[in-house]
Length: 277
Image 1 (tube, rainbow, N blue to C red):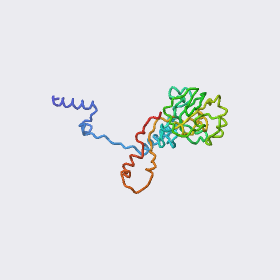
Image 2 (image 1 turned 45 degrees about the vertical axis):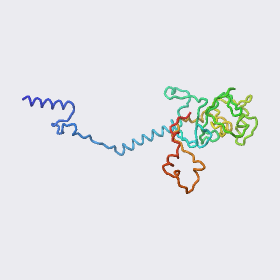
Image 3 (image 1 turned 30 degrees about the vertical axis):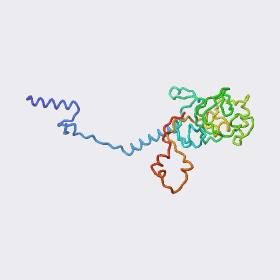
Image 4 (image 1 turned 90 degrees about the vertical axis):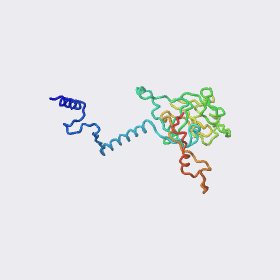
């Protein structure tokens, strides 16, 4: 074998060892000449992938998170009318061996919670926990006291409204508000000691942040632990409510009629993905 033939043989062997096709296989050995085959998924594979995504989404929405929309002003300024929330449904849970895997937490004073409304469990309500089991609760001119000490509430909003003895001096000795649930009034009188309301075991006392415009535990009672769904953790979208002037319909021309301007102004973009505290 000549030196030229020996060199060609070694080059051929080297290409074969590195996995590059040779001329002997009937395929060109130039790497740029190779074209990978594109394989499209079959209909069955596509449907199977979609079903997997749907199952995972349903699991997440059923057991982990759930979306809600704020319909009233009772939690302003923390939560505004038109805010859309994602609620963590897995944050609260009973102590168990799953505690090492699932980060369960106890309900804490100051937590914002979503729960099944005690008077109608088909409805969901959002409020802030003001009293834990065993706490002594009372309000003096709207100021919340827990176990005899005033509570700092930087999130609470008080408006310049007329004094309401039942709302502001809770628990009031007299039935002064027609919005108070009758059954709750009878139960509340049994739970009051020395002018303070005692929160029973397995229940929570909740208030709205908009303290003068919230129908909360003062009006319908305690929230049982089993009614609590979870805790909101993020505002993922927020629709802006039109003002009285924006709601008027007329034929005047102006920048307010610009479609692009309407698209920008219909939502509170600065509230998107805001963490709820």
